[in-house]
Length: 143
Image (tube, rainbow, N blue to C red; front, side, top):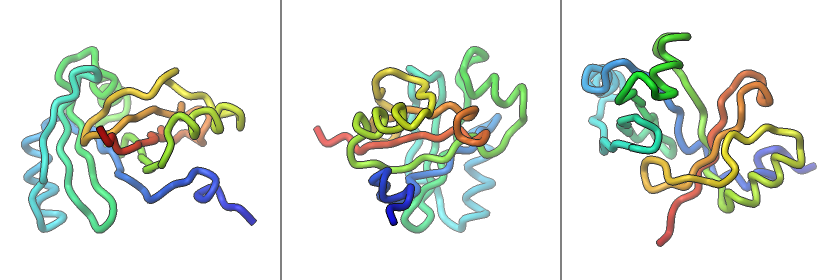
């Protein structure tokens, strides 16, 4: 029997994204919670966000702060407040997975993968087609 994880060629849960109002305050909070500092802060201009990453075993926590009021993260926080925003899966071939998921009936939010944070190509699956969960697919950029 082939499981969803095997079909997805998922290597692991890459990260869990958490929408935050204040990245600096949230970094301090998560440093206390996880017992270690973040290892990277990065701005993703195309998404109007600043991100911070913490390692947690084989996965990561990504804190995401809006850099302007038009950011999807700003709108998310305005509607739902701070909290878990998305779950990201590492995949080996993002374009292949996008096509497979489209054929399975999932709604993909972008036609082509785009450059995301932490040296990744990313795309998103609409939460309405995934039981209310925003799913991100991530592929390491190997240029």
